[in-house]
Length: 77
Image (cartoon, rainbow, N blue to C red; front, side):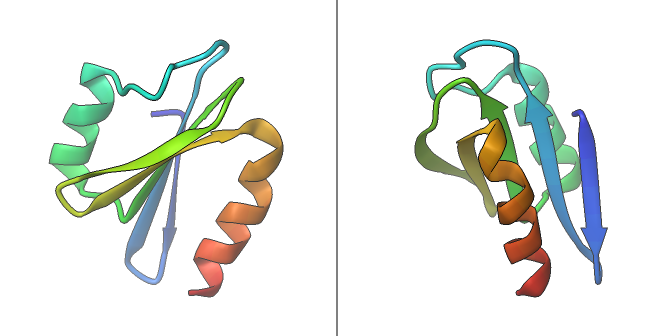
């Protein structure tokens, strides 16, 4: 995991990939979700894809330029 944001006891995580992840998650990302149960996990890559949900974690596939605004919106919840 590249970085984790904790706000008022809630976790958001971010994994950054250089190329196209094709809407799939790695084994290490799945292990992180099982261990820490973040509320949301952003996977940043060259393309965006439809979100997934694993257990109680929303997984959002986004492009780099979207990250700052999404983190800001998440903190405001």
